Length: 367
Image 1 (cartoon, one colour):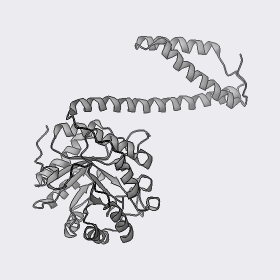
Image 2 (tube, one colour):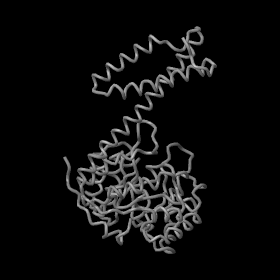
Image 3 (cartoon, helix red, strand yellow):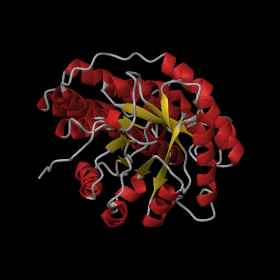
Image 4 (cartoon, rainbow, N blue to C red):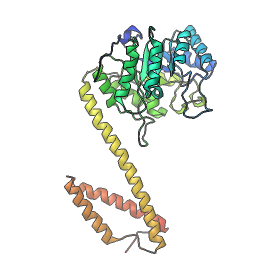
């Protein structure tokens, strides 16, 4: 059952000035120099309203860089003093919240790894009771809208009304072009359920690499995202964490300049259904490619087996039977016979080519 969220308008805690709203900064606060150099670069970009930096980093394995903790919070105080930018950090437990408040952090966010655990979210919510600070909640790692809503509700019930969600993509069961699959239909559905809830997009964690950032950012604004959280670093190639997905402040300015901001339609039901279809196509395409890869692995094993047993590559009777059987199956499923023949012939041609290479011959196989 979907409850109500009591939410203050975004403009009451983060002025947009009718521009694309950008939250930006390094994945990790690595040093005072790195934080300040990056912040001064971002302060030149009018659209950047909030400086982000990872102070506590939830790493998959121990003995990796996990952030500088409280020391880094002092660097963020310098950012506010020298640039005027507001600051935001990720928190994962009550102690993080207490320290963030002590060092005058303006906004906090709860990360995807924390959102998956309702006990952790409730502990953070309990710590926030009686506190007036904006909180942003990232989606959980897995595509579970109810879990995301539950985290928002827990924080809201603690009295936090300056509330926003961050869409950072979801773990995908297969490899894809993205680090985390966008599954746009999920944040669109969240917006449909809670029209007043600001939803930001995190292109950095969706993309995982710089080459996709512009595409994802444009898509986010096309789907009426309220802003983006994007990772920047004054020397991204030297970053201690997530170097491949960070860009310089100068590159961010170019990205912003190339954005096309369109009029809003508010037709969330239409967009949600559209993205539902597209996501299903993406999933099926990924499955299809995986199946083809497995099929050709078996073809390679078959080719080696034929070679070891001195059997010819091309078995005309077998191919004829395959073609007839597959066409019959396709017909029963309503597929066009001509299209199916083209697909089968392409697969057969590649199978023959792979076996020919295994046999060590570049000539066409003959019976």
